[in-house]
Structure formats: C-alpha cells, structure tokens
Amino acid sequence: MADDMLDASELLALAAYIEDGVQRAAEGAYPLVKEHALKLRDQWRDNAKRSAGRHGKHYHRSITAEQIPRTDAAEWEVGPNRALKQGSMGRGFEYGSAHQPPHLDGARATVAIAPDFNKAVDEFMRSLL
Image (cartoon, rainbow, N blue to C red; front, side, top):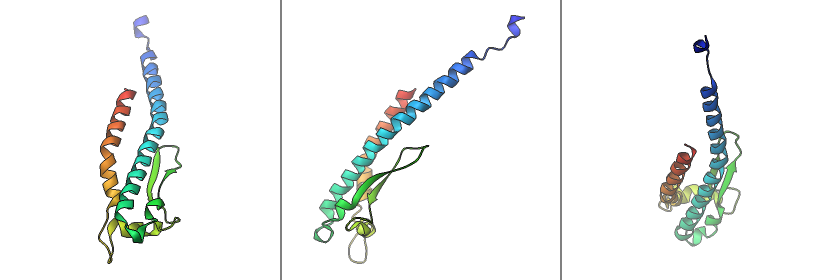
C-alpha cells in the first residue's frame, strides 16, 4: 500500500528553490540596473558636453537618471530633464532641428554601454541558476 502514496516533497523543494531565486533576482536587479543607468547618464552627459557647443553649454547638466518607482521591476529613466536649464532642448539636440543636425548623444551612449549591461545581466542571470 505504501507504493500508492503520493510524495510532493520534491515539488515543494523545487517551489522553494524557485521562490528563493525570484527573491535573489529581485534583490540583485535593482543595483545592476541602477549602476548601468548612472553609466548611461554619465556617458550621455560626456557626449552632450562635447557636441552641444556654446549654445548648449548647460544642456549636459540637464541629463539625469531617475528611478521609476515600481514593485515589479527595476526601472530607471535617463535623459534630459525639462525642468532643468536647457533640458527642454533635448529633443532638438538628440534628433536635430531646422538649425542643427542630430547629435545622437543618447543613442551613442546607449550603444556604448549596451554590451557591458547585457554582459552584466547575463552573468547575473547565470548566478541565479
């Protein structure tokens, strides 16, 4: 009769392992995303400082990195803050206007840091396995 018994101990152990992995992922994702959001901000600022010229001498300081409050994700917004001096000029600097070609400072910054970010995410995900 003992052969007919159902044993869920392995399933419960797997569920606990998965739950632990989800908790570790949540704890580790925030600092990883924050670090790379700040790197993106800094690279974008450096690009903008070089490309904006005298007419955009304050623009690079308007580029910020701010956390988007969420309980289900680690999310940051990086870019010109319209509330800061020359922040409203971000669209014109990035994409160009009738008076200037596109600078693509944010796009170039994203391309520059993407490999490092992708590698860090890959390593982090592997560490959870």
